[in-house]
Structure formats: structure tokens, C-alpha cells
Length: 214
Image (tube, rainbow, N blue to C red; front, side, top):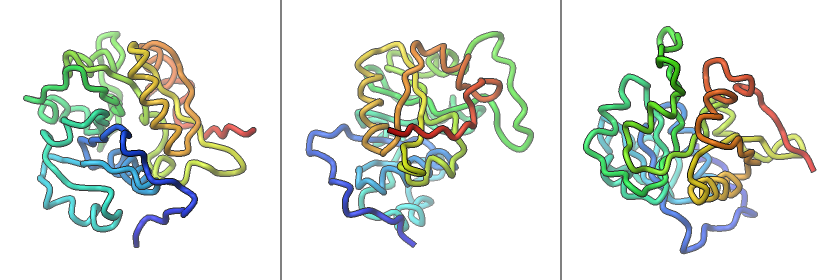
């Protein structure tokens, strides 16, 4: 069944940023569903190749296209969401300098979901080392995937998404994307703030389904 799309949602502007997704697990797929609901075009890639993504792209419709990692990395805004241990391979060889890269990753992974020892660093600091020169914004990491995939306007308000980063223009672009998806974005400040406040595990803001009303 295709993702329901409200006719009140306008088509994206011609000058809207191009969106790439690296990783088609729970978070990457949920992000793709949120984009498809608003008819926002995107290219999604995973480690198994475009053919493995045909069920997802067929379900979500023509706004989502399967491609290679290299194609996804050419977008203006790239969301990366893969298992933590697979991040080096997922990002190897990609030139993301100057690109806005959304870090939607957390240093836990199945089957144990035990937190990894990052030697006192936040996950986004470690992630940033893997994407030298990229303009990293932390977002889409603190809610369960099913909440990201659902309609963001709910219960008389808008579901809250936290984000953080050190590049003001990159944060503004991600804030506009969050808004275009129907969420209410809350800027936590510098990139390290997310690890302290909305990083999984341990952040006091994680997994709270907050709704902004009014």
C-alpha cells in the first residue's frame, strides 16, 4: 500500500535542496516515508545495491529513487543512518566536503543495543571524523523510527524534532527541511549538545514524543 499523501501538501519548489539517503534500515526508510508523504524527491542507497530497494521505492512512489552511495552523496542534504559499526564502510571513498550531512546515527546496534565506549566523545564528534569537510547536523536520531514515519502533525500540534550543529547555514537548511516535513524543530545549539541532551543512549530528551501545540 502506498504511503497516504494529503492533497493539501504542496509540491516542493524547483529550487528545493536535493536529498540523499545513505542507509535503508529503520531510520533511513522512515525518513524516506516522511519525504514521500510530502512529495519531496530523494535518492536512497544501501550496501546491497539499488535492486534491493525496489520494494521500498515501489511502495513509496516516484518521488523516491534507488541509487548508489555516490549518487546519494551528490545531494545537497544527505542523511546517513546505518549501523554504527558499518559507518566507515558506508562512507568510505565519498567526497562530502561542503555538503550538509545529517547524522542520524547512535552508537548502539542490534542485537544487544549496548552503548559503545567512545572514550568521552559524543557520537557526532566521532561521525564528523568520517566525513571530513562536511557540514554535519545531528537530527532524526532521538525518536523511534515509527514516529518519524508517521504524519508529524498530530494531536492538535506538531511532533518535535531536535537538531544541533556548528554551521549556522547548514542548521537553517535542516530546520527548513524539518519544517517542510511537518515537524517542529528545536535547535539545541552546538553539535556536541546533541550527545549530551538528545543522544542515544543516555540523553534526557531521547524517545520522548513531544508535541508542540499553538
